[in-house]
Amino acid sequence: MIDTFVRIGPLMDPASYPQWAQHMIDDCRESKRRVVEHEFYQRLRDGQLRPATIRQYLIGGWPVVEQFSLYMAHNLTKTRFARHPGEDMARRWLMRNIRVELNHADYWVHWCHAHGVTLGDLQAQDVPPELNGLNDWCWRVCATESLAIAMAATNYAIEGATGEWSAVVCADDTYAQGFPEETRKRAMKWLKMHAQYDDAHPWEALEIICTLVGENPTPLLRAELRRAVCKSYDCMYLFLERCMQLEQRQAGRTRLGLPRDSVATGAGQLTGRSAPAHSHPCYPAPSGTDTPA
Image 1 (tube, one colour):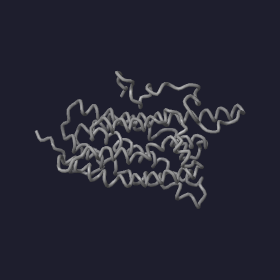
Image 2: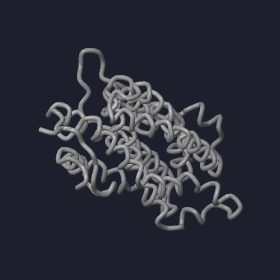
Image 3: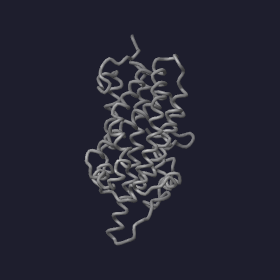
Image 4: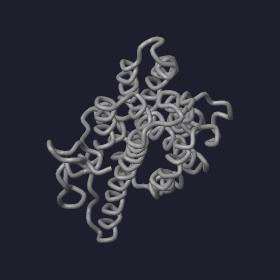
């Protein structure tokens, strides 16, 4: 049986990939949909989120944006020249795109500045611990798993969903029109770049993953790839849910005539108490236990 995968169809057509990859896409579809169609992005698009909520989102999302190039650099160290065609593909692709991700960090800072969030705010990371879950998961998977699984969790899953939710926000100009004309282009650059650039990026990552594992990976490897992809989507979803908790709390305080919280900070400020970090699905489990997929 020939196990080597070589794509012969269009890059962005699921039918161009092995049957196992098509099943993975189908199996993870609902987890991805919960992120892309989340109420947070619809309200952001329509200009209906409160400043404190957007502030929390931007600060909490910074570690993933700032360190995404580092995830990729870590994965680059798993490759060796001419050892495997998939490693050669990954090597070239990662080297080329690490610089792109560095630029994206600059664009995120510009977006933050348009909302009054400073670099000091981003570095202080004064947010609930649940918002650290996605970054912690990315580091965990890149540090402990194979190149294929790590790229599936980051370059395929996270970049794919990010491209789609960015397109949702940019589908209407209501949010963009909320910025002064002189700063609008700079404020929207991160969103615009991802809504356009990331269309092909996750498919390129999927091609590399399929080249690495071949046409017939073991059932165990297929399950591990699926779990890694779904866990990334789930971490993104839980991040958004936490942000919406703040939005709802702010709305409730307004209805009651109470002063609004100035900034969302620390564990438990939004709901009285939060679960221990290790119970969060995106955190590593305590020693001797398994993290739920």
